[in-house]
Length: 260
Image (tube, rainbow, N blue to C red; front, side, top):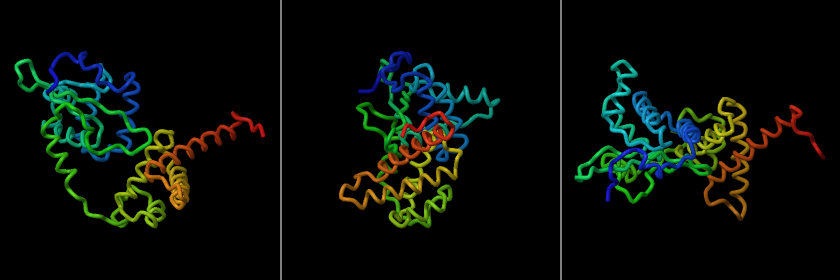
């Protein structure tokens, strides 16, 4: 059964965030990883949808027409098309940024959709398919997402790795994981960890930590207690190393004394 349309207040229980600040922090992390997946127009639509999700952090039931009108007014009638906005919905839902639910009026006719933003996963890669919810999702996204999931990607080796991944990192990872997609996933988790520790601008330091973390992962894999999820385990190592770096810097600045 679909949700009944109504005031945004009635959907407050759908929110996964304690307040607007927490919602914005999670959106920043989503964008740090997936911003390049969207065109400029799609990003405009996504950012406006985020702004419409401020009253109840992470929840919005505004009509597409209402959102597009606000965008057109902001950009002096040079906004984005309805098709661009819908493409953004399909991409964002497929990446797991939010889930879309249909709502209906009392007479059973379809009303505006309910957009429920998801929290950024803490210690594992975000799922690219929609979460399974009992409510019916928007037909457009459901159809295209299923096609994307069923479509089998060809196995591309490391020579097809995206140029955004530093070559030194590719060189070491390819010796153990030769697929381009896997290498890119390891680097994506590096970017997430760097962002969460305010190190995203320290490219050389981030690269050095990523390589040391990967070597530690390989040592772990070679043991009898090899991790079941190598990428998630790699992320855990990254977090620890960034934390160690933080305390090392505090010690060097004299904020922490060596008690030994």
